[in-house]
Image 1 (cartoon, rainbow, N blue to C red):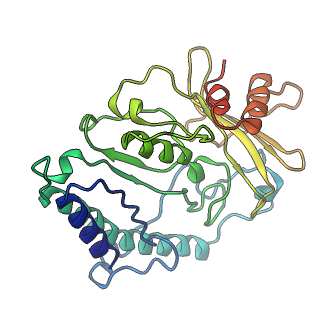
Image 2: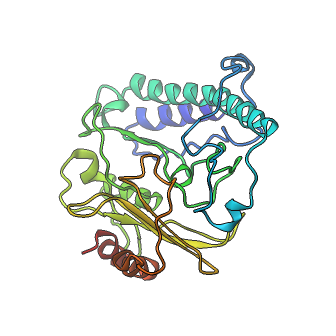
Length: 295
């Protein structure tokens, strides 16, 4: 139903040469992650991700709410695998939806170009990651670990080189200014994000080196933190401050699985990250550009 509506909307607007914006948000792979009947057995028996942090044996360096969790039982692991199977199978319909959108753009002629696909940008992303047993966390999100805050962002469109990739940090707050910029519209000064166009076309010169992960209390205390990328003389790091005083620090370059070893030392806190975190917590609008770009 969603796929048909999206394709009809695209075809109707593109064929008339009318600029359009379509936000297509299928519920898959949210619970109950019920696959379409045609896909119900495509991945029977598939195992969930098994990162090095899966069912982590030693969580003594982690906050108390993780240390208090027992290792996952065989029943919990089976439930993780079954959930993953359902999620992967339910995503097959999303694959079909994406293919339908691309096909609609590829086959719709417009007054200005042979096919709408030639001058349309497609963004494919999600709003959050998900746990599959990492750090003994059986499911859900909300936490500041890489499994929660990193998600796919794939973009195709005019000026974007096929097969190109980047390690630049993008945020959900970038989408609104990006879409306005691509539509040659004014970006309001209150926007916290920035247009992704220079990242997409490879012309970027200055870009953010840090972002602010934060969340209200939900299965763990509220937190605010800073996640950086590798720069000259400094590794990629993540520093977290929880309500109640607990802190975590991870070197994302030397910790091969990203967050197995909390290296926070209360006698030598990371002064540079502490100060940058304060700037990120208090920024707004264009001021966030300075805080994210850092010294």
